[in-house]
Image (tube, rainbow, N blue to C red):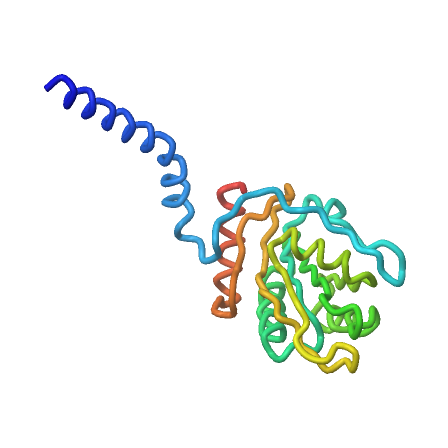
Length: 203
């Protein structure tokens, strides 16, 4: 009987410990479950790439602003265009806010700095285009954001596509990835609503 009591007491203690450890995660999930994006709140990896003009802006250069970061490329088959249009409408709604959209090209072989800068310029004044020159540097930055990509097709003849994730990252003015938006099912007004709510709660 004593053995059963000890086992019961141990099980109870173990259950209480598991509850104590999981409670902060559960409370965080409940608190942030009404955001449209996936709650992250982790330090954003630094980025800076060598471009034709020298070094690109770094993450630190945007401290004090909210960033919307996206990795894409000009020859994308439609997915990137959808994400760029989404960001365009988001930035139009937030044009008077300290928010910048940063686009990083995944395709240095075909995306010239001029063409990628033209894309950003066409989208709006609060868009920044970064077109690096070294594929390995771009891959390192993309991987640090869990955005791996690979070429599909004949890369020697420039007849290829890139298999990539295409998430949009919302980075706080303190330099934390707060929310991520995966896929193309998010509406601009949902991202705008998340931003405004974050400002209200002081994230």
